[in-house]
Length: 450
Image 1: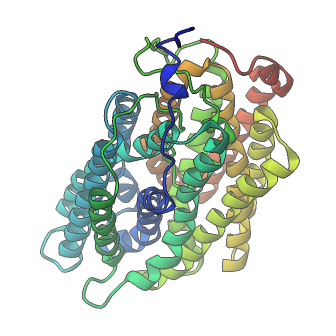
Image 2: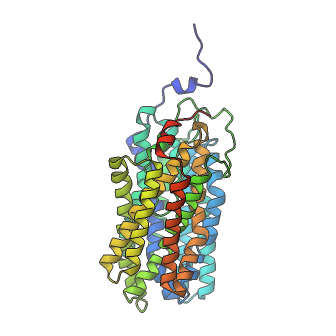
Image 3: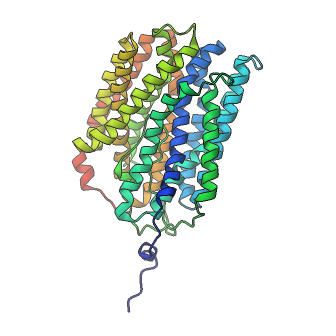
């Protein structure tokens, strides 16, 4: 009688599928964090104006958190391959809850004159860093949990569902933000509301999700950028025989297989981050709301929500319908983003701003899964967990300098800011046209065994 190979034996053992109730819980972990972050983006321009500080300082307040995400995201992604997923999810939620509660408290104290503006921003930045350092543990853990407990035949659908939760959160956050500005809390209201929501999800996670003993490595892309909902099915392509017990080779950022895709991702990510960084301030200026910043939450939330919906439309509709490959998706996305940014830059009414944001976001919604899938296809199966961490870190890297730089250039002259962003988009298009592997080549070399 033949004995099963010890490496592949775990793949043959029956695994209990994830119940619908637990899948909803995992969905909520991703959705709450995404919604909270985009709700924050809706109110921060108004809070900065109310505090009387320069726009660029509001953008710089995110820098330390983004830097921590760059450092920690790949570490958590690799750790999720080795340690229990539930513990990592709980750690990420605790980071999110503590960050939002403290951020809300610091901003409330600043707006009520308890703290001077400079200390408000410094303490906000310190509180925000908790999300960058510990909140980054949750997304890879959620995706790894689903990957290690879902049969291969059902994995694509399950992973797409989890990825879509982040995208849905980017729609819900801006929509809810104006409704969460309560009389007692003022503009920081959304921070407190989403901290409470995070506590509820954490309690449900602790009570309902069983501890796990992972047998298989994580195989999911980590979604970090606010409008980068990733529904790429490549995240679900795994080999059930990949055992955690095997040696996983170290994947370097400088790997020649990844280099063109990472360059495209880094430059395009800076364009997207800079655009999102200055969008709220531009809306306040064009609509003449600087004198009444509280009234700016609604218009900013509406424009951001239109962008989030367009992002999901491109990823859930256009990419599957047009069957775009990584290179095509990247190039078409950059071209569309450039057009949308130009429309947004010349707009004078809320409707045209929403249209420009929607076109640009649809373009970024095509581009981001394009370069992510290209990077995934460029390496072997066993390296997918690491490439997910690298992509997550790359997404976070764009938010270290780009938002503040975009706002700074916009503060000098709005034309300079928008021209710089459009130039970055054009550079990605030209570079991608020349350097990225064609979709035919990528399809021929996938999947590659490591």
